[in-house]
Length: 88
Image (cartoon, rainbow, N blue to C red; front, side):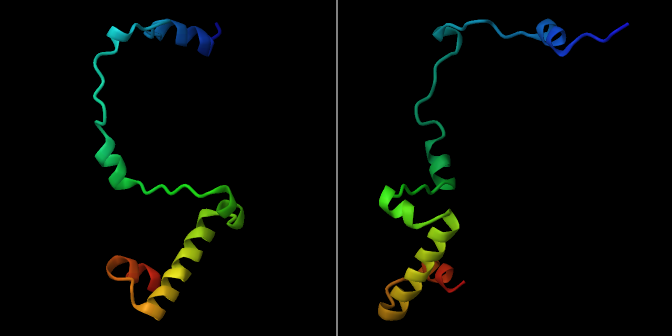
């Protein structure tokens, strides 16, 4: 005897409704993960003109680190964690 197809198994175990009403979902909390997300992410949007100059995020990072090294060498204006990253 053949085993049932995946579709048949899925249909038998499917507990999802076809549609849900808003009240079935409960109350959402605005900004619940906002702080945690911002701590772990640092997204910078480039203008199209700048983005065309860099083929990858690594290229952008290398260019910025080079600029930081130049700024530190000429003015000594970069301090703390930024200076450590620029030396690497």
